[in-house]
Length: 198
Image (cartoon, rainbow, N blue to C red):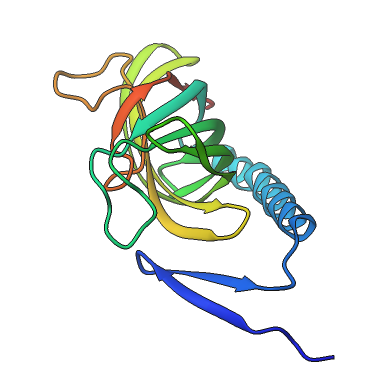
């Protein structure tokens, strides 16, 4: 039996592999396997953070978060007016520079039609600026993490996700919500929340 050809396409310095034998079942299996592995690692990583006395947090996208593309992004399928909808949660320890989490995404065209659906997974910690808050369960801050978006036909790695919660925020802090800077950079709805877990 002759193998079907595989093609590679560059997308913002990311690689998309398409194999004619790929199926939805394989995609779902790989997505679920990835999410299970990430959440299993979260328990181990955050347990380590508690043992060292480091400040660790969790974050929630309390309601679906929406961000709009202000401009068409050349070399990508993103056009001005597209909207990205995110749901999910995660955890991180800024002292030890570890993060985990994930959720789902939907990419909408300006006319409201769905362009793509999939999952997102946190793959790395970049930075966190705490704004504090009235209690450990209600904290504000600005988090930057590295994420991978896993869609039905492509995986896009190395993207930055910004999570902003305005509790106790200083003047000039980024708007509440989530964005993918440079891609979907205008938050248009949704709330977030940080929780101090130790």
